[in-house]
Figure (cartoon, rainbow, N blue to C red):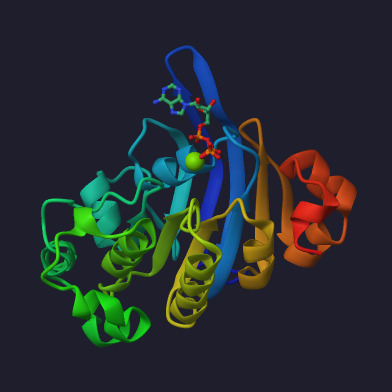
Length: 241
Ligand SMILES: Nc1ncnc2c1ncn2[C@@H]1O[C@H](COP(=O)(O)OP(=O)(O)OP(=O)(O)O)[C@@H](O)[C@H]1O
Ligand SMILES: [Mg+2]
């Protein structure tokens, strides 16, 4: 186990695709419990960082979970160590029902938290027999989050922009669900909505052009409008003040 209580350590993560270096040596830690935000403007490498942790892209560097090195393991073994992933595009199976989507996510080595997910998202029970492709974007996001929350053996959830494109009401629902989920799991959350990130995250990591430019307390970022503007491309009006 790590000395400072961090659950996930990312050290010098580098990803090169074709001729382009996408990540140029990303290092940060995720504290156990609660939500750590991974922020940064479009195209800075947030999604690639999550994919690099999971081994979905070729990478160098070192990633450890609770002291165990993940980097040499195949993706399925990393997932079995308890790494849940909610990708940017949600990835629900549109032709399958809500219930089938959830059943497909069940891992044999884990308890399944159906009570929790139906408490968070009652409409998933009501719409169990509905094809996921006919749900609204917000409802599909609920399915995607529920799939990651379902397996109680997950130790960390990597969640990529869950509020993107959702109505304000749905953003609130998703944020509430994440807050509840963070009581039982550690979450690394990519979030462009700084107001949401500020509300949910204790610590934040900010990327710019494939490198970490800020890591620390969310308040230190939000309270420094020049920093927020520089690395998040936000006006003060957009920063949730
Ligand atoms: N498979 C790929 N092939 C080539 N370039 C890629 C590939 N994946 C990502 N990139 C490039 O790498 C950079 C980082 O992409 P990434 O998707 O990680 O950024 P991001 O921070 O998640 O952006 P966004 O906010 O738009 O989701 C971008 O310039 C992107 O075009
Ligand atoms: Mg992305």
